[in-house]
Each structure stands twice: as structure tokens, then as C-alpha cells.
Length: 87
Image 1 (cartoon, one colour):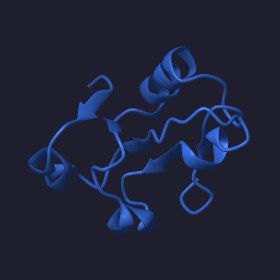
Image 2 (tube, one colour):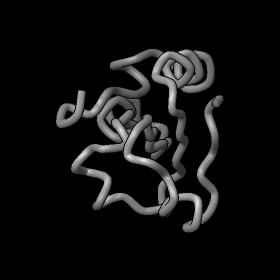
Image 3 (cartoon, one colour):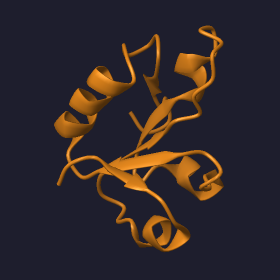
Image 4 (cartoon, helix red, strand yellow):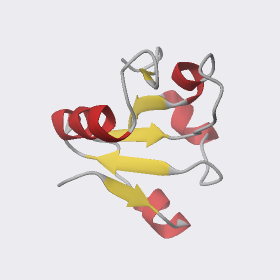
């Protein structure tokens, strides 16, 4: 599977606990990008607090997700970061 945008609640609710979810808050403040844009394991305890108000991406393959994030979002720990609870 490649990286997929989660576009509705049915897709969100049906995601398995295996795989990876990226919360893409976006924004322009470079001091906030790595804080707000987070990659989580789908089994992360933070998932219960997530909703679709923030765009989400999903992949069942970590390497595919990392490649996508590097190409489309930017540099790890600058433009996005991994969740400290689940990574």
C-alpha cells in the first residue's frame, strides 16, 4: 500500500492498529512545524485524541511513509517529527 489521505470518518474509523498515521497541521511558523506535524504508529495512545479537523495520511509501510514525508513535507525534525510516545 502507498500513502493514502484519510478523507472521511468511515476511513478513519476503519484504520487498523498496524501502520502509521501522519498529522499534517501545516502552518508557516518554522519553530512549530516539527512540534505540530507528527508521525505516529497507528496504535499510538494519542490516536484517541485525534480527529479529522487536521489532515491525516496513512500507510501500512514505514519506509513508504518516510519516503513520502521526505519528498512532500520536508526534513525530519525540522518540518515534521516522530511522536515521542510511540517511536
